[in-house]
Structures are given as structure tokens and as C-alpha cells.
Image (cartoon, rainbow, N blue to C red; front, side):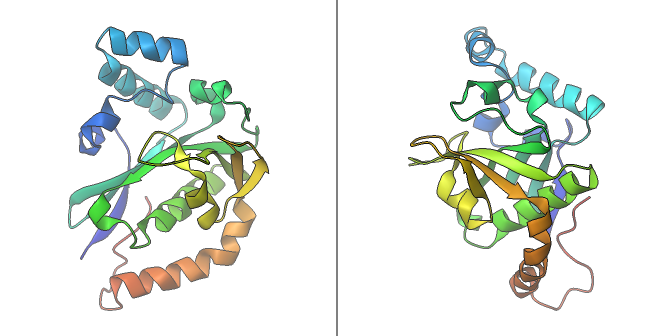
Length: 205
């Protein structure tokens, strides 16, 4: 079973779930987001946002494929590109961090370690770009898939709470700490994929 993470571009944007392609929760401030939905153009706004970030900063996400089938994705960017982040009671995201905006894995592929591998891939990318950490707003009352990630999930993959809140704590993953669990993740990935493949099936680009 081949697994790979591919940088998000306008070409593979259609591989995101339809509801996510037309969601501009993070990409626009609350007022602009509501206006885009009312005008019936959220998908165009999403494309414009990804295009702008690609030009100015580079790839801001990864799409996860299993046997060439898209089964998940993750979005991240410096807080300056994420207008909605300032609307949270625990903002702002630290200047030395990239914001993990949102992520999703198809139900049939959850529980296989892909979420942890996604975070590891983002960590490697962000570290290469000179940032010290990844921060995210967590939903402490999470009940179902939504734009804000469950706080418990973030804690489970290594994030620590830096600003507590009853609903939306801000969490942080120091990139130097990822080095300590890098080997654990790679060992788990080896077990997940089996040791039969000569080339790694999951390689960040």
C-alpha cells in the first residue's frame, strides 16, 4: 500500500473534500468570510488565498495519498496569512511560529498514524524555513470534524498548551522537541508500511 504526502498546489486542490475546498474559515476574517459565502464565491477566495501564499511564501499544505487516492490533507501558514487567527481569544500566534490551521483524514484511514506523520512532515518543512515552532488553536469541546482541530489530538502528537482557555486554548510544538520523537515516528512508520518496500512510500517533498 503506497502512501505519500504531496505539497498542496492549485492543481491538486480539487483532491480536498468539497466542503473544505469551499471553506474560507481561516483564509478570511469573519466579516469577509461571511461576505464571500453570501456572494457564492468561497471556492474562488480559497483558490486566490492558496495562490497568493504559494507566490509569497511557498506551499502551505500537504495532501495525503494512499494508493493514489486522496485520503487527507493539512494546511499551515505564518499567522500573517491567516486573518481568522486574530479573532480567537487566545491569539496572537507567536511571531517565531507557523500556524497549523486545520487537517483532516478520511474516516477509513484514521487510527493508522497518518495524523502524526502529517505533523512530522509539517515540522520538517517549517524547520527548513527557519521557524522555531508550530502553533495551533485547539477546540477543547470538539465533538465532530470542523475547521478547528481537537485540542486532545494536538496534545497527543506533542503540542503543549501555551495559553489555556475553556474553549480555544493555544498550543505549541517546539520544533527542537520533534527531533526526540522523530525516530519513534519513523519506527512506527516502518511497522505501518512493512519493511518490504525499498523506497519510502511516504516522502515529504
